[in-house]
Amino acid sequence: MDDMALIRHDRSGPYYSNLGAIIHRDFFRYSSTTFSLQLSRALPTSYNLQLAWAVRYEMTITTIEKIPSPYVHHVIELPSPSEGEPSTKISCLLHPTLIPLLPSPSATPMIEDPPYEVHNTLTKGFGMFAKRPISKGSLIITEHPAYILPGFASNKVSLEDFEEVWRRLPREVGKEVASMANCRTLEESPSIIDGVARTNALTIQLEFPSNFPDKSPGAKHYGGLFLKIGRCNHSCGINAGWEWDFSTLSSTLFALRDIEAGEEITNTYVHPLQSKADRWKKLQPDYRFDCDCPWCNHKDEAEQAASDRDREYIGTYVPTRPTYVKWAIDLCLPDDFVINSHLAVLPIIRKEGLHRLLPLFMEDIVRCYAELGDEENFRLWAEETVQLCRTGQKELAEEFSLMLQNPQRNCAKWGQRKRLQEERMQQDLNYDFEADDTLINLFGTSPP
Image 1 (cartoon, rainbow, N blue to C red):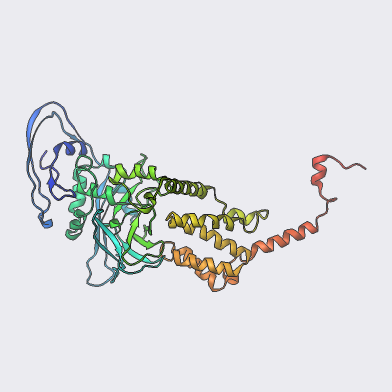
Image 2 (image 1 turned 90 degrees about the vertical axis):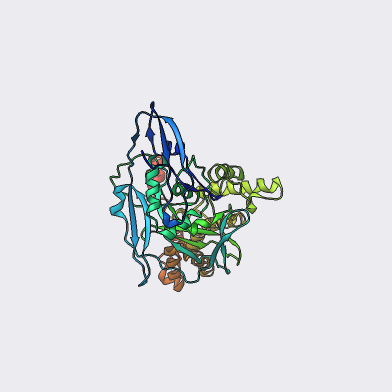
C-alpha cells in the first residue's frame, strides 16, 4: 500500500493529507496488525503545485483488500471544428457498457465575444455576469464537460479512480478545476475531483444498453463538471436555464428573461417550488450556505409566507393543470378554459422568478388559439414563445416559426375546434329521438 495519501486544494489554498479519510474512501477492509506508514504525494508537477507535507500514521491492520470498481476510465476526444485548433478532451469514469454507445461529435465552436464574464465576488466566490444586455431566449454559452462521473456511486469509486480522472485532464483544464469552489470537507470528499463535482456538477443523461447489468438505485445517474456553466451561483429565481444534449455531449446555457448588463447570471441548486425552509434544508448540508436571493429575503414574514404559498400552488398546479391535449378532444369544455387557467398563473410564475416553467403553459396557449382560429392572439403568443424557446427548445421554436409564416396552411389543426363544434351542432339538429334505441334500452319498450 504505497503513495495513497491525498493532496487536495481547499478553498483557503493549502493542501492536506488524511489517511483516515482515504482508508474509508478507497474501501479497504482491515483489522489487527500494527505497523507504521509514511505517506506523501505531490500533485503532477505540470500543475505547478508543491508537495504539502508528509504524514506518519500508526494503525492496526491485518489484511487489506481493495474492492473492485465497476467503472472504467475513458477519454472522449472531440475533433476541433476549426483547422489548427486543439481537440477537446473529456475525462470520464463510466460503466464499460456505455462506451460503445457514446456519440462522436465535433467540438462546439467557441463564441468569439461571449456575452458573459467570470469574476470574483465579495461573498460568493466566482460568479458569471452579463457583459452586455442579453435578451430572453439568447444563447449564453454551449460547453462540453471537463469530466464525467457517476452521480450517486461515490461509495463504489476509489480514490485512485478519482485521481486517474484528474491525471487525464489537460493541464489548463486541471488548473481551472482546482480553482473552483469545493464545499466538501476532506473527510467527505478526499479527492478534489469528487469535491468539486459535488459542489458544481450538473446532472446529465447518457445512453444505456437495454441489458444494462447494474440494477442498483442511482446506477444510471451521471454528472458533468462544466468549467463555465459551473460558475453560475445559486438563486431561487433564476434568469438562465440549461439543456444537456447527448448527441453533441454539450450543455447550452440560455437566458430565461431579459438580463441587464452587469447582472449576475444564476442557476438553481434546489427544487424551486419548495418553501424557503425546505430549500434551505437542502442548501445548507449540500452546499454549506444560506441563500441571500430576493425570494429568500422578503421584508417581513407575511411576504415570505405568501411567496411560499405561491410556490406551493404552482407546484400543485403543474401536475393537475388543464391541458391542450384533453381540451382539444372535449368539446364540452369552454373554448377559453385552458387559456384562462394558464393566464391566471403566469403572473405568479413571473413574480416568483420561475420563468423556466413559462414554455410549458405558453405552448398550450398557442395551440389553443390555433384550434380556435384566433390569428391575432395566436401570432402574439407564438412570437413570444419562439423568442423564449429559440435556444432551449429549438424544435418547438422551429415548429411555431413555420406556423407563423402561414397559420392556415402550416397548422394542420387550424380552426379545428370551430369546425367540430359546427359539426356537433348539425348532428344535434338532425337528431331523431324516436329512432334512438338508447332510451328504449334504458327504460324498456315504449308503451303502444
